[in-house]
Amino acid sequence: MSEAILRKDWVSQVELAFEKLKAASTAERQEWFEIIREDHGRDAEAELKAKLTAHDQAMQPKPRLTWRRHLNGAKATATGDAIKVTPLRDVVDVATPTPEPAPKTEPEPEPSKLMLPAVRFSTETPKPNDAPAVLSQVAPYDSAKEYVRRNSFRDGLLAAFFWQGEFWEWNGRHYEALPAEVIRDRVYAFLDGSQKLARDEVARFRPTPKNVNEVIDALKAGLTPVSKGWHPPVWIDTGQSAADVLVFRNGLVNVVTGERMPLTPKLWVHSGVDYDYDPKAKCPRWERFLEEVFPGDRASQDCIEEQLGYGMTEETKFERAGMWIGEKRSGKGTIAFIQRKLIGDGAYVGLSFTSWLSNENSASCMIGKRVGVFPDVRLKPGKAYGASYDAGGINFPSIEMLLKITGEDTMTLGRKWIGPWHGQLKLKLILISNDILNFNDAILPTRFIKINFTQSFAEREDADLREKLKAEISGIAIRCMAAYRRLLARGRFSQPQSSIELERKVQAESDPYTAFISHYFVVEPEGMVNCALVKLKFEEWCHQRRRADLLCSTSTASQLSQRLKKVASLRTFKPHGGQRQYIGLRMKTKEERETA
Image (cartoon, rainbow, N blue to C red):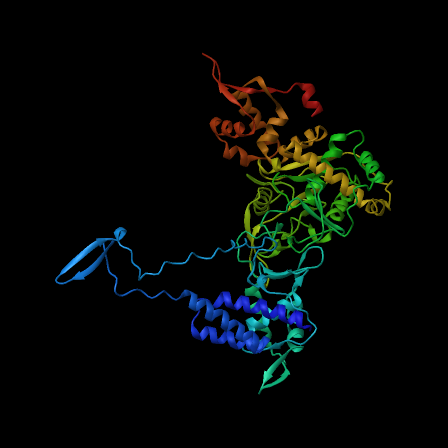
């Protein structure tokens, strides 16, 4: 190690010790003197003592003049038995020295904004790992600091943290979680390659499990963020959100402004892609594929790319999920494959309603992911049991979880062997099915943007299509980023007109009262229908579908009216001498019922 490097480390350590010991006790100072002497020699120890001595002398109060006494702002002088009081403004006291003006000092510079001390070890100075460290077995915190100085800095910045029960390390593009056995192996290797003082001689450290456990515990303490709300993606140096920044193999790109930045450990983000950002890339096969799947339907093509672009980001503010329903072999799985390639395998998770909430830890697979896909969803059909009815469909725990995820709620998820995770999932959900899904809830279907896939490629599939599209992934990313900017400018997702009927069917499948109105009536502001006729038709509809449970829950006309008003904006009106009417509803014609 060169003298310049030694001197730099010496100066930084002396400065750090000086700041910590200004108001410390004598015993604490003595401990630091010993540490500085062991690490850097007696010259560094002498320099630290001199700085502290000068500081102590400067803080000593100046001696008072004992012959002077003040009474209410005046000077008192004893003359015989009397005391003469003279106003101070009339006295020139030559015995009191005139204080010298304080020397002008430059204002202290503001703390560096290049790297805020998000963790305690961020103030350490990186050190080359070209010589064995000399450690003490009774000072694991100091050993942890030395480990960090030699192993945890990248480009002069701390690039390792302990967050939410896991160690995270920058891999050159983004931060990735280190398995517990990996960090344990590294600490063992570091301690085994270090030395210790034994009987005034340097000897091999020879770590024990106790030594390793103590150092890992000290690393957890020193690498844990001290600020709250430190959730990715965020800039470590400013604390500002980085939800619009995408991590490519050749740099960072702001998806909104198009600004390009070099890769840096200052970006606290947990996923990146393994392809380059190329603003000139094209994707002709992808454009042709979209036209094949949605022939002449530009709105559906744009909506798909907007959903894919939304999935590339960490943004969740639109609070919408995707629902892709349609024919078999219609391109739904291929588009989900493209979504996975756009965001990287590490940010994608495949889910199933059968197992995603099967135990207290099963939802942990969604942590840190950007897109979760339910492929080929199949739900339990409804079935009558006498007067009882099992609606089937999605169960209530899944309904609750879907509402929480799409609603940007903060939640706590269990994790096996690690401990619970707290935060908001940055997850965009996509449900894929050939069938209309029963959500068993009137609100949940409104959280989904539906896409209707009407074209089937069965028996005429292109077996190499995914590889062809994968080769155009950079160009597809450019198109989807542009689509996301279009979404931001509009401020919301727009349901394609070709999927309006699909949306009605999903709502009817999920809510029996919506299904009833859809079967017999049309919602029209100027429509009018007799309330007694509506109740009669409702009883008929329930008997046809063996829904005796609905008749029990709406046994009176007022109960049915309350239910129907939640589905449509209905009003009731009773003309003089006539029967009560629903306003905003009319009966379907025979032709409308036959084509429904």
